[in-house]
Length: 95
Image 1: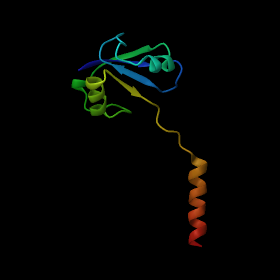
Image 2 (image 1 turned 180 degrees about the vertical axis):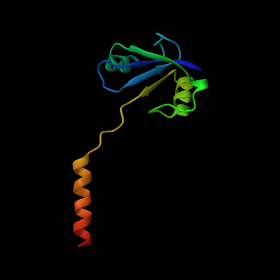
Image 3 (image 1 turned 120 degrees about the horizontal axis):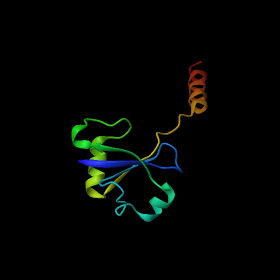
């Protein structure tokens, strides 16, 4: 399964996988508007891959087959301050 991967110029670390290069007909118009003008990153043969860096390859394949596209959003940002506060609270409760 060959697919094209595009990055968003508006949303950092946001990628759109589609079944055929430059064919955005399956992608909803509101998503395309939010995504911005897609910038081609690469073409990927998913049949020869076992995994992808940040996406579940089976989910990508399923979405491409069922809806014609897959949107990869950036990983959630770590909230180190919240984690630190939670650890401090746990330590205080133990004492």
